[in-house]
Image (cartoon, rainbow, N blue to C red; front, top):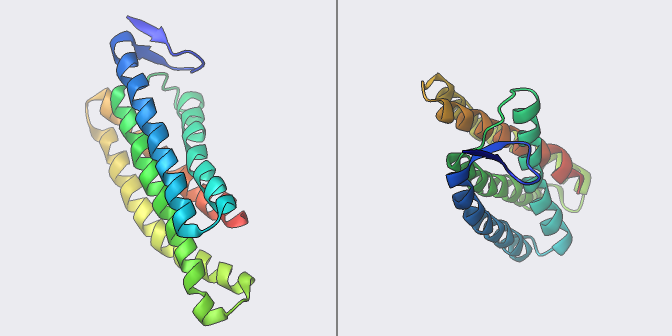
Length: 174
């Protein structure tokens, strides 16, 4: 049968809820790895913590839009894959912006405002192209006659969109 997920405004088929719950621990491990790796690469606990939080924030935003606007009240095992994808793609967004900021030091020295503007300008071009092509490919799943694939495509697109938005708003503010 269909059961409501505890604390979650979606319906989940009973048999798949066990599979999803087991995958949540792998997702926690993925975000933990992202955090630890971010500390290593960025050499800052503050930036690593808030960067990982920014990647994670795309998940509740996408779920809210999925539930509120699209009226999709169903989560399946395939949607868990999108959570792992956004962990990796969101981390890439953070690392690209951080690396562009570091590279800008050779051009602008210690002028952080110019370095940030440089990283933003280059990052929007690079990540905008990457995220938009991936997002369109996920939206192409909406042409599938399979409802679950359509839901997966919309959910994945929303995750990508919010990861992009949080990278260029929330993360740059850090």
